[in-house]
Image (cartoon, rainbow, N blue to C red; front, side, top):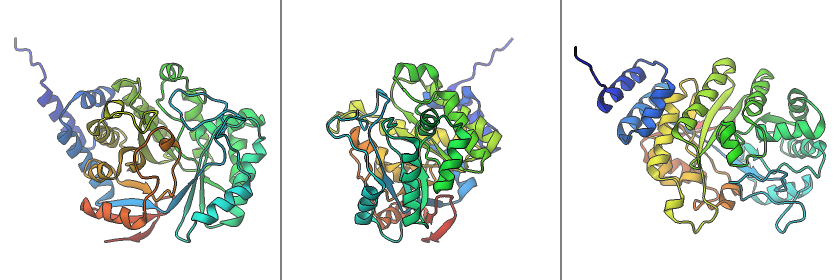
Length: 367
């Protein structure tokens, strides 16, 4: 009796055939890919899937990141952005103060305000509602991409309202979509070890489910590179894939490379380029029901972002203007980028830059 023991090559070939014929990859497939060092094979498969879904188009948006407050009740182990009330560097801006900041940096091409911040319990829920309302009144044509699922859970506790009621109040004030943050790794064991003192796994998913049921399309993320295992990452992706099967409400997945606590940290304290590219490619392969995978240049840099366009990424985020959260944690990348540089970056990868709105409607194709 002959026993055939699958080799790494034959196992990769099985996965290649699944990808080619559009069959869904399993948890074991995903873990195998993470443990393989054949980055080119993984990237080629991801590129095949992306070209099938999006052709050579790569999307970006003119946006601004805004942070109303960095005061936060949570003390998550990986966060360098948060402050306690009264601590040096702590702030909570009024709507008028935020408008003054915007006026210094705004130009008519901006289509989206990306709004996140701390879970500040020293102001009422109405503060967060009014923050959106004042922006929408002054910039009615700009989409408000505001708050994470963890912030929505916090607002629910702060106000006594259900997730649905919180979201309905925010939509009345001008909310267009939720950001993807707060996911970290969707494992309760991980969240306990990393002191993720905010929405748990089920709460994170339930907020997005509720948003999707209300017709709000959303974004989602994964913060990788801490203590999680490869299996944890794949299970995270499968949880998102299962919710997408149910609601089809996610527009894009954003893998976020963990940043060290200091810009002076050595390369040994950062994810390798190999790991970043592999994560983008595996995300593309596992999330077969997501249209887009984003390469976030704030975390991985512009040149690696360019390479990722041949490994499954179809979105390079946006101009941002001044990013603070990753940079407070030690990111070495630019805080923002110009439209011209984004176009150059995409064209340099042999792809077609497409300026989009928040909902992936095409504004202009730069072919």
